[in-house]
Length: 413
Image (tube, rainbow, N blue to C red; front, side, top):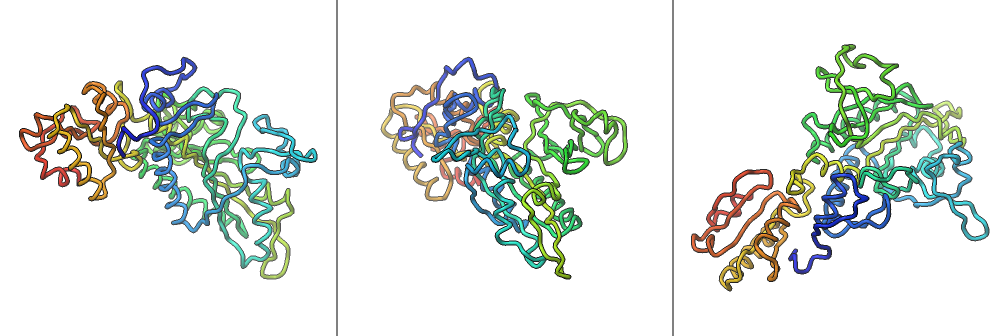
């Protein structure tokens, strides 16, 4: 992609309303643009990042046998009346044609449960798991954390249906392991993201959150250094020791919740009278689990974790492009060499953002490259051309180095 063709620009000035690091950097770098509090447009660079996060999640959900579907963003309020959730403060409610009472879904239990009910009748139809990646809507009272707390946000929600709790427990562990694989692939592994015990509400004693340890985190968790599991502050009075090893040394940390999993059991199946016939022909309630992860929230978390005073530092797996190619100088030969390198990189399947702007200064291009934060910066200039080389620098490295042009592909391998 040529920067001269790219929709969206870097900017030095943003609204004073933006308090979070992720919003400030993503707006300044041209990844997102604010629509209103808690609602953002995704520009081409931001959409590429979001898509890469979604695809990693999608691959790991498919790997545990889940089927991808797509459910509607709105449904009838009557479904929320059945589950007792119509009084939730976060619901966006509105009236449709003929006075129909409608809701924008903050989650999809009220949709997926009667949907599965259309296809599950017997124990032979179980277990089954479905998921979607779709925007959700919550009327958040405090939408001041950029992508970490939105009123419209992107969510992967998986729902599993089982004949008994033993089968639910088995799938629950599969999903838990898949989540850790996702975070590792996203660059949030290696102890950065920890399993956290949280309140199970009406469903069970505990649910599990996945908390990425970060100073910007709104949640307070207490981490066991030995087991690397944590307890959310909301249940610390109930669970004063590590739930795994029983140790009492729990260190207070800030965390960003990047996922959660619940054993719903029969909470929603009972509300819709969702039952199946067992091997003896007897009606039994369907047992459910749900597993949430927000790609947009993950995107904001990555920026909170990986940045410096110059800008974003994207992990390679989610960076919008792998290489930021800069041409410095207006010499015709320099431009021709940069064009040649650009075409070679594309031919070799390397994703490259080519800053080909003629009116931008060298300082502006270098500053934008640091702000945007692609894994590799490659510079073509009169100096490098004279030495039949390019200057290459990893975004998180201190020093750049000269590499022979003929060796560039090897360097990027």
